[in-house]
Image 1 (tube, rainbow, N blue to C red):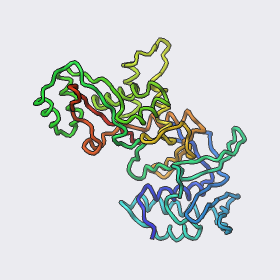
Image 2: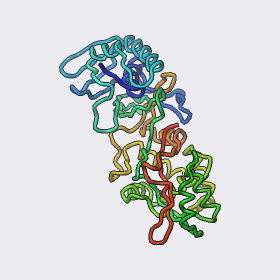
Image 3: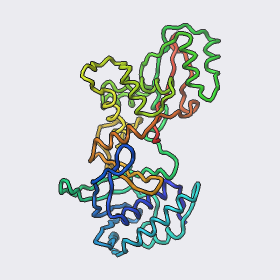
Length: 357
């Protein structure tokens, strides 16, 4: 029996729903359809454990080919199954099975919830772009709002930023007292205590060189910019990426020439978010080559599906900036949030984790 959580079942729902709708709708920053823009779907490609399968749309029939077998299934059947599966996803919790859907899946050679793929691509859709006449093959990673918000950038020691505490003398007892603050917002409260004593935070480096070099590849000033965004997150009530970037624009810590109102920080952070979304990982050398994915399919809480793709670069970047937030991960697991001493100097680490709202 196939079992999965809401996010995993959403992948099958997306397949059925898109075949039933026969079209793909791009979304805007507010996660709503962009009016008067739609991509008719020509076919959907999915890699299963038993081979590659192609779902081609011919009028009101879906032709499924692969493994030398051909099935012809009415579009209406995919619509019905999508509606039924949506109600099951909404009404279940944790890990669950949907026997009726599993039976239908097996009848069309769809054997697993997650498409088998080495890249982040969950589904590939060939569409007809009426504006250009092209038929691009677009790879997508599926993000579902039916389950828990997914992370864009996972926390790890790899995403720690190291700061030196300057302009203050703190003795061993005071260090111990600050490190023992165990309130609900303990990291923020420790920072407040250090600042109250006159301490300032000076960015030194990221904990891992590989992450720093990945950031420098995207933009040579990105480590410093992100260090300010991260410090603002732990020092203020802001968590939305867009708000934190706006705050950084106002502070202009890198002293850019803003005479002509250039949005330096916003532009650079958008590039960073896009590169994470399309393959950059903190622990691996980033070459700047996007993986096959290229975008996200968002399964909304009401079952509507919207697409964001590097094919429409501006919408994709704006979506990432407007719909993500910074999050506090486990400080004990990832080793941050405490004052420590090295060669007679005091240091403090903060962690970067980015999650969808």
